[in-house]
Image 1 (spheres, helix red, strand yellow):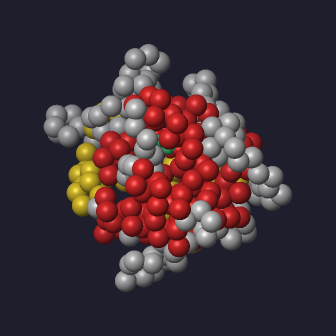
Image 2 (tube, helix red, strand yellow):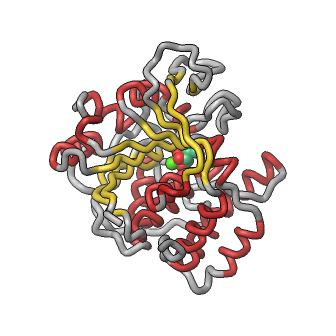
Amino acid sequence: MTERRVIVDTDTAGDDSQALVMAALSERIEIEAVTVAAGNVGFDDEVRNAKYSLQLADSADVPVYEGARSPLLKDHETAEYVHGEGGLGGDLDPEVDIPSADGFAPDAIVELAREHPGELTLVCIAPLTNVALALQREPALGDLLDSVWVMGGNVNCLGNVTPAAEYNFWVDPDAAKLVVRELDVTLVDWGLVVRDSTFGTETLDRIADAADESRFADFFTSIAASVRAFNREQFGEDVTTQPDSVVSALLVDPSLVEREGTYHVDVDEREGLTRGYTLVDELGVTDGDRNTRVVESIDEDGFRRLFLDTVVHGEPERSLE
Ligand code: RIB
Ligand code: CA
């Protein structure tokens, strides 16, 4: 299988860290660079978390570029209430002695795309500020990339930060609006994540039981503590979802996609009740470009197996031929 070369744009906290570990351990993915955007927790914590995750997966050589420390226009709101203080579950607060790469992340995205035209996949698992800034620098960015994958939005379903909106699109709706308009994106939305990537106590216990043998299982179990507590308190359910790892998993094994559709998508950038709302024209009643490929269903068992192979065995492709 040919390797897929990626740039990962991340607001590294719990679930981002697992997506980075999966991509770093995968024999099918080569991480060219990681770029950090304002999102889940304090920016310097996100940068530390990205470096820590890469180092844990023996990929400390991957350059980490620092990007936008706030959304394009909106005031920034972090989500420590989900990810814990520092973003790694609350207890983990590791020191990491790895310098960031020189240069501003949006510039790095553009320069790498120009250096390797048509070869790089941009994996967006954060608010889309860096990607919007890269587009402003290089309007032809879409022609210079192989593909663009985005975790964000909520396709005609309940959001996770307001009823109308999912966090990545809510934090920087101006950036999200620009990105889905200017780039042909493959979208992994919150609805798919809840339907097909939710782990209950059986799976979570299986990972916890492997913590003594696997540093990855130990890491996941630590970071999952805060999101499990949040879900127990908010919804009465002891579960975790794996939003960003769904994107990594689909890049490792595209056959996990069971159903998809291509639609016109727009984002409400206005302040107010519907800030960050994702309009997905499944009815075909608008005349907007149908340029967003929405992943609507994935093989839930296959995803879980790939995730377990990653965190328990350190081998994402262990069960794949
Ligand atoms: O809504 C989930 C998304 O917002 C994930 O990418 C999570 O890491 C946060 O960035
Ligand atoms: Ca994220």
